[in-house]
Image (cartoon, rainbow over all chains, first blue to last red; front, side):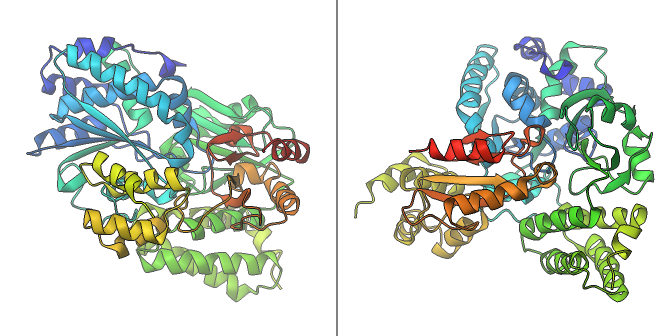
Amino acid sequence: MKILQNSNFKALSKIAGMKPEEIIEIIKKSGLTGRGGADFPTGLKLEFTRNSKGEKYVIANADEGEPGTFKDKLILEKNPNNIIEGMIIAGYAIGSNKGYLYLRGEYSYLKNKLQKVISNATKIANKLKIYFDIEIISGAGAYVCGDETAIIESIEGNRGNPRIKPPFPANKGLFNKPTLINNVETLANIPLIILDKNWNNNLRLFSLSGNVTKPGVYELESGFSLKKLINLGKPKNNIKAVYFGCSGGCIPYENIKLDSKTIKEKGAMLGSCTIIAIDEKHDLVDIATNIAKFFEYESCGKCTPCREGTMRVLELLEKISLKKAAKKDLDLLEELCRVIASTSLCELGQSSTNHITTALKYFRNEFTDKLK
Amino acid sequence: MSFRDIDEIIKDRKDNLLLPMLEEIQVKFGYVSEANAHYLSRKTGIPFSKIYGVITFYEMLYTEPKGKYIIRICNSPSCYLNGSLNLIKFLASLLKIKSGETTKNKKFSLEIVSCIGCCDKAPAMMINNKIYHNLDEKKIKKIISGLK
């Protein structure tokens, strides 16, 4: 895999003599976009933060929590050097000398290893007269802390409640200072971009799991066919649907291109390239209830639509599951989904009903068959 | 009761960041007791209400003592599709506790959790900091009986 090629500080040595603006220009030209799911151009983010005045911070978002996603873990385990090197380069480019790696609590077994990589990397950077300090902050089991402003709140020592944007972190982030926050896969790509003129933004890491016998991380070009990917996973039974994590919604299994635009046209979100395959033995009301439980549990409670809504959604789905619901309950569920999606404060709430909206779009009969 | 350990933790955290301090306290004591939280509040100037709010926000921070082994078993879709629900039932009957409870001898706590990032090795669970994957009933029985 390209992403696992250890850059071994060659990129850091290369940028040591460059102007920060030159580095930002290289990253902008590469076309690198955020791998956390938002696909925002990383070069622009770097530029915005560079243009902000005062003390600045870099945060590596290693709080991968979307169910079905494990590609960041692969990089953290197999090639942590590139993440740290990417952080230092990003810090140098925006004019920051302090970074935090926010590691999800469930990955804390990786902390010691990462600490060693950080010590070694900062020593090498110092020799190149680049002074950048990195500290690992452990998360403590909150899915919402994958949101960039919730991470900031969490590091500051608050409950991980997301902030209202704007202001964006590039202007007012950690301790109200300009802050660059990037997903670890994004950061790990930075050294590769510095070293390789032909670096390709289309390569993505797909986390494939569910009803397949060969689950795993597959590095493929964006636009790869879903059918081919599922075949790589060698499913035992016929696949009926695929879910893009819990928040991305679902689509029926068909021959379709895996790129953000195509998936969006189907009403779902490719996000961080998470593919959960569901075979025909599974009932989608059951899956919807499982996912609704997840959101009800992980809602941070800050805004009403998400806090109350996710709970009522779960109640309604359980009612449908138990065959105690009528048509009016399903209507209410659909209305509730619309309200939660359009009025929640952050992405967690806004995307919490995608899975239901898309399941009802493509597999409505599985729900109506259960009505009284 | 001595608060020396907490003094040390505060001294090491010149930036007064709460989350790492709470985690250090938990590593030392297994949970953050009310007395320790009050002491931390007095020494750092962070209001007790805020400290309590933060502890209870995070799933992995505790206000009550937990078992020696904290079992976190995943029930998110990838594990669920691979039979996690039956394993959770099995584990609960094996330990004779429900999710969120601790055995009387304080050896095991059981928690049903969201995705732990082991979807390619589902079903999976964590016991303290260690991951156990591709689970079935036989494997779980062996793992549990191997914990002293």
